[in-house]
Image 1 (spheres, rainbow, N blue to C red):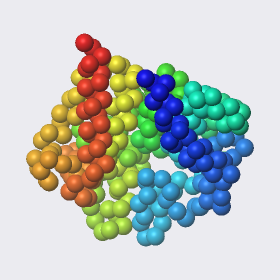
Image 2 (cartoon, one colour):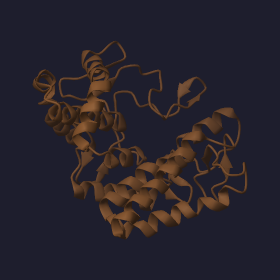
Image 3 (tube, rainbow, N blue to C red):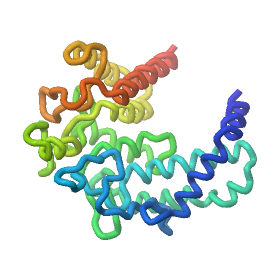
Length: 283
């Protein structure tokens, strides 16, 4: 059945996936692939990632260069396409891309990982490295295809649990960072600044839960279920049956932004489905 599904997916989406990868490799004046295999974003004045808030016309979190999660997703995409191509005997694609994962993996570790610090940098651009502790490292570690070792993933998960995890999801920045803003208040510029320098984003629970359960399997279920169960009370306090856009990084993590945010709701549904999958594995 898996083989049939693989052929069906490759027949339907293979050409589109290959076109996307080839266009990134060809590059343009904004985004392209460097000789080391990593994606590079060239526009210093724009916020290209999900951390896209602006204050006074400038990105709150400048991520010029090589943002961590973009290159993790790039590695994941290339690796997935190569696996699909191999299963479907697409030799032309394999010949053109088979060396890319190893190149990306080596460059990824060199650019982002520090044995001394025990976690991943958030941005690298060749001139400086941003070592801010942000949830993007959890995204990088949780993906099905990741350049990280099991031990490195465990270190990322432990750091996230101690510095970023709250009852409403992951903070966008660790509280011990000088740039941290734990409460969204003040004028528009001040509120926008807090969106990605401390505010909690529930959709990031999808990656935390995925990573944690990949590492701990059945023994991790109680931890994830406790966090998910904690959202039940929240769904009766603002807009009934749904989750707000974001929450203050500081306790008591008051809801902020839109009363109902689709990607937060979707992430929690996905997490519940993931828990059910692991529970079935126990039986």
